[in-house]
Every structure is written in structure tokens, then in C-alpha cells.
Length: 109
Length: 113
Image (cartoon, rainbow over all chains, first blue to last red; front, side, top):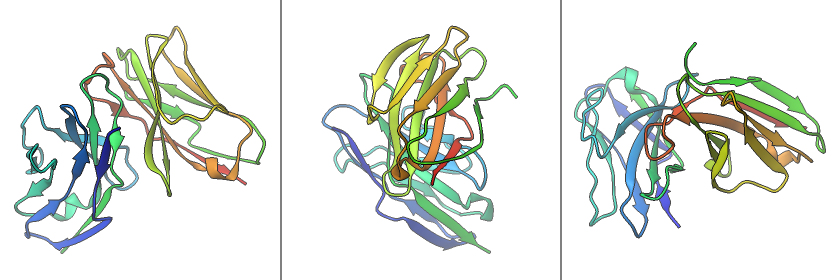
């Protein structure tokens, strides 16, 4: 069975500081990894997925199969980045998402 | 609104009752997913439908059932409700149901008293 772990429930940084949200997974096959974001009072939306290798809103994430990690990074955090971030995994054989517990990011002015 | 819609937004009911949550997928999407978000269990996959057929099942209790209708909207039925069923229930949709992006609805907040 697959599992996603986000070790930090809360993360607080100052505007302009680098931010890293950690995500570790366990799955014996080849996973697809995603980051979803939920801004206050809004619905969950896809931020990025590892296969697209895009940078969205300045965020990047690299899949490290050796460390089974998919950490989300941004070099200079902005106040509008404050939100709940979920790391999620799907398997090659299906598209159901297994979510981590989420990290609430607060960017202080 | 061409996005995923869910009704009702809020639902308050008593233990032992039965409720139905409704989801309309994005225009053109054939697959619907249901997720439950609770304080103690986080976001958990319940069930997926594709073009009217059940495709995948997750941690869905036997007291819960779902279906997808010919017009592609979906309903999640929760019966013999318990206090622990109080949660936010999300619906998501995608076009192919096979690894493509899932678009989420705003959720239905269920409170069981």
C-alpha cells in the first residue's frame, strides 16, 4: 500500500525567505507525485505534478526516488503563498490520489 | 460555473439518519471521485466512477454507497450515520479517469449530531 507523509503540520516563514515543504512517500512501484494547494475558503487545486517538470507560481518540486521524497520549494516566499499544501501520490495502475496530512504554510510580512 | 459543483454546501443531521450528497463534474469530464476529509484521518479516497461504472474503491464503508448517472452527475449516499462520519466530502472530476488532473469541487460539510 502507498503512503504519503508530510512531517510538518505548520510552517511559518517571513516574506522573501526560502521555503521548503517536505513530502516523503512509500510505494514499491513508480509513483506519480503531485502538490495540491488550498487557499483560504477556496477549493483544492493542482499546483504541480512531477511529470510536467513545470514551475508554477515560482514553486518547484523534484522527485528523488532514492530518498522517496518530493519536496516543494520556493526561493522567495510571498504573503499570497499562505495556504494549505497537500502532497499526493497516484500509482501507474490507477488515478486515485493518496494524500499526505497537509502543511499549513504562513508567510509573514 | 463550468467547474465541479457540489450540493448542499452544509448538511446537519442526526445519528442514524441517511443523507445524499450530489456532485456535478466539469463539462466534458467522464470520471468522478469522492474523497472524505476528517480531522483524524485526513483526506481519504472513497470511490471512483468512470462513465457510469465503478472504477476503483478505497476506504468506503459498507454504510456508504455511490453511483454515477447517465448525465454523469454522481451521488454519495451515507446511511446509519454516526458521529464519526462528520467530515468534509469532496468530489473531483477528470476527463479520462486515468492519471489526468483531477479538479475538485468546494466540498459538502456534513455534521452529524
